[in-house]
Length: 221
Image (cartoon, rainbow, N blue to C red):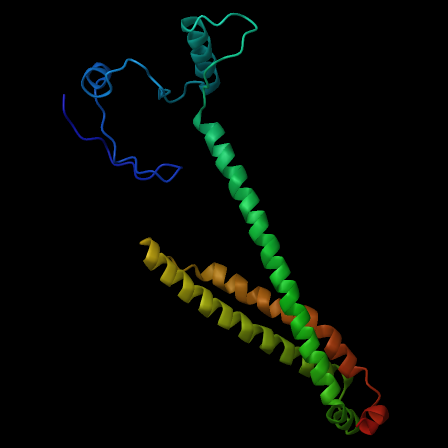
């Protein structure tokens, strides 16, 4: 019997399951390998059947065929798809945590940089702040001014980062010959985090600017 298998695409390990040839066991042993050794068996379980029960039956059958007595270690392994999925899920979770830690450190470093820039800006513009407070500006207005500057600074950095990351992703996808999919939700979330960093790390410099004494600020050189 000769036929074509249905299209299945890539497996969980990245191999192409459509690049598969199925032949009778005896034909392979006689024509190709010249050996009767079998290194692996793939067992398909009917829908609705208990995978655990089938696995136990396979273990008992193989122990019987291999003459393995009670208390002796098995010289084979029986793996099911759930174990493979759990292994892959655990690996993915660890990689996600590592990437999240790197991203958190990057955000922290960027936030500290923004705070330092805003502190320098407050120091250099002390007389300007004093003049604004002397002519009637409220503390919350000064606070809002510097807070907006910090948010704008961090948001611009976020937009530049998204543009660079998108360009690098498109370039890398072209090199690896894989499709690139733009996700607006992920990019919006990245922009939101960059703006939030400006609010968090820009609040202290803005609070410092708003709490300046107008007389001391006007005397500042």
